[in-house]
Image (cartoon, rainbow, N blue to C red):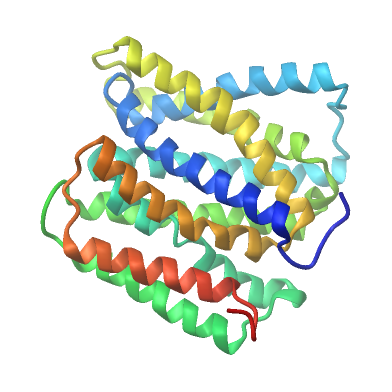
Amino acid sequence: MERKDHIDTFGAAALIAFALHLAFNQVVIKVASGGFSPVFQAGLRSAGAVVVLLIWMQLRGVSFKVPRNAWAGGIAAGLFFSLEFMFLFTALDITTVSRASVIFYSMPVWLSLIAHVYFPGERLTRLKVIGLVMAMSGVALALADRSGGEVSWAGDLLALASALCWAAIVVCVRSTPLSAVPPAQQLMFQILVSAPILLLIAPFLGPMIRDIQPIHIAALLFQIIFIASLGFLVWFWLMTIYPASSVASFSFLSPVFSVLLGWLLLAEDVAPSVWGALVLVASGIYMINRKPGVV
């Protein structure tokens, strides 16, 4: 498909489905942490995704070759990918899905600020500025709340750091020769770089194996197949078709879905302030993506 300057019907449907997919994954990560330590789980996920993606590329006849001028961007994206999931998995281990998700999915806020400087076609408008203020207020409200459920400053800050790393990956993809590389090779760089890094770090962060049960193994396999390989492949493919900030802005649905799924599936106690933060963040990110004159 040729590159487009706006989100069409197909893009909207695909991004809504992907937002729900990612939201469910937050619950899956939380469940899997009962059997694997966070960083070890993230490393296993990347290592397994390498295998799945290699098989997929072989079956589809996709080349494994990447131009040398794209290696630097690919390695940088891989390093940020490592940090992103080391931070996120640890955050989900020590705080609730709802809190971590509201903060983590503020990524479009930080991406919009970066895009204003680095991507000429994605300058901030008055609507986007209003959206940024709303979303950042929501993040501040979530950070300020210290009541109810699993509340951890470390978890909150790790979720925020993870969001910043996610935005940095988008910058690496868009502002280096990596942008001309097909999505499969972009993703391969990230999981291939992150797998050894995460697996080497994991032993230094406590016991890697916890009380493993079949559900933990199933949760890990779900992440490997449907998130870290095929799922992200779809996301990077969408990034090649639609504007970066518009694709990212649909993640305003993921915190909504995540909070609801955490409440429904994990029986999490969601404080009123977190619901308020969710409304601000989701509304703000919607404003970032909304075009003037469009309701």
